[in-house]
Image (cartoon, rainbow, N blue to C red):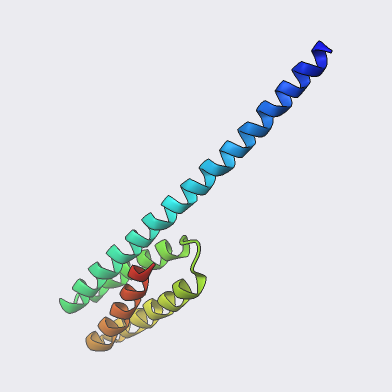
Length: 116
């Protein structure tokens, strides 16, 4: 009887540890996603500022970093996909030196990321 009690106690401890660890993982994922959104927003804002100064090389670095941060965002896949498409279009237009249109695309992407 004593072995049965010990076995049941060990089993219940294992189950409770498994439940709490999965909850901690879910909280960690949510906070990581919000920090990735913040990083993407910050990089896009810096890229827009650099484009306005006609510093296209630095702007491209910020846009690459924004795309890398955006790839780590979980949830809202449709919004993230649309925003990433706008960032890519902004990159292409930045490469061509089109200040007006690249700023417009990046501003739209920024609004989408802020809506998350």
